[in-house]
Length: 246
Image (cartoon, rainbow, N blue to C red; front, side, top):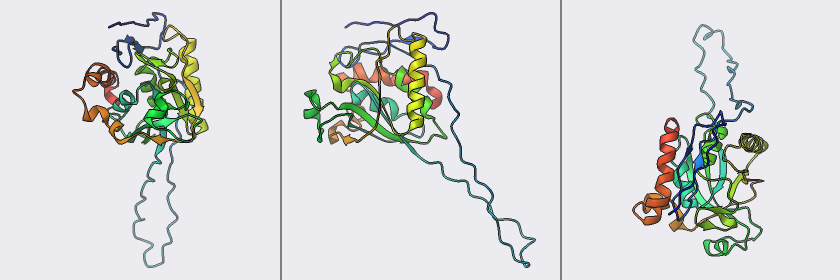
């Protein structure tokens, strides 16, 4: 069992580098990623509707305006074994329908067996919907970079291969801008003590993983991999991002 810590005393925006990984999925230590300055999220305001009042009811109170329901957005992240990433994000506020799967490949088919051989080009990822009025994409990126080691190319701890690469698959230009700005800032500050190799690429398609991969940590919390690899990541996020939990 090997522990390593990335420390950068000069980083003014990072809280600390916290021990996360254990041999088996990720043995690297990660730092809490700082928020990046970007354009504030645009919130929809509902203008009062023009009410047609007859002479008979002109003195009555105007009808109550019902606020517009915030639009859900989709996010797709790869940060090593999707069992770990799924368990981390599904505990966050407004995050719903978390699914483990595969994306970013060139093959027309993706299964665990095919992706594991490293020949399809797919990455193990999670995809989910979230309410940006409750938790912003910028905050999700903060959790993403804090919960894994983005400096190891095609590897998280003992899991080695292109399918375990660190990756952000953006769904629109705003997500791309946030991800690129955040990555640039972390590299400029040498936040992890080594260059960040996270891939930032457009989302194309998503292949849902087999049923036994879904909710893996919740269904197998006593398994050795879950106890020694997944749980430390979950507990770290619960401690660092307590205000963002459900």
